[in-house]
Length: 303
Image (cartoon, helix red, strand yellow):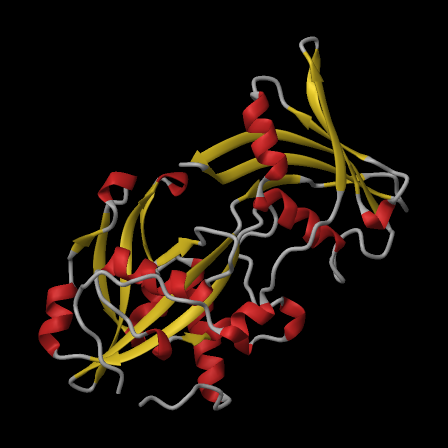
């Protein structure tokens, strides 16, 4: 069984080679020219390989500053979205659609980097001449961890209870977080998020990438809300064995980064009841993949 200990600060960990190979670095995709005057909107022209000779205009919405606009255009969030459009199964790959304009509407900074990006893309279906729905809330890749702890013959799932303003509710969900950089450290991020949100230390080598069991055509990721958000999530599993007093200590524990406005309580739920007590898509997706992987004998043996 895997051991689990209560908190000590965990140093940043390197990603597993398999994940780095699968979620590799981003290549340069476009060339551009930026211009603006005091009397005209900020604009940025790009040329995409799939539609050479058809430049795409990037335009700033009224009220967006020059710095915000430049940060948006140069951000990894925007560049990754463009890369997705041009990928093998991307919207622009077969030439049936074309991107004509992108309106940058909002930028939220997390310190020195962009956390959230809001824009509207004009993508035209050549067959009908109609625009397809193109409002995008970009936040990039994230991770979530299904933590299962065995104690005295029963398996428990460790969840977080958080204030989620967009829903207007307090939501019971898996510990999760956004990637803090462009290096693709999915495993390291998962471990750090658990430490910050739950207050326990996990062994890196005991993490199981559940999304790695999906077909390669999925990109080994899940999209919780693809109709409006680019968020892609890597789902991980941690299984451990603990004493019953650890379960008691975790229940109701207050954690999170208070300076970042994280008001988090830990909740421990018997695993057999988990699928019925949470509306969180991350949790339900993790349960589904875990159960199917277990059924097909894909999960590694616990030490």
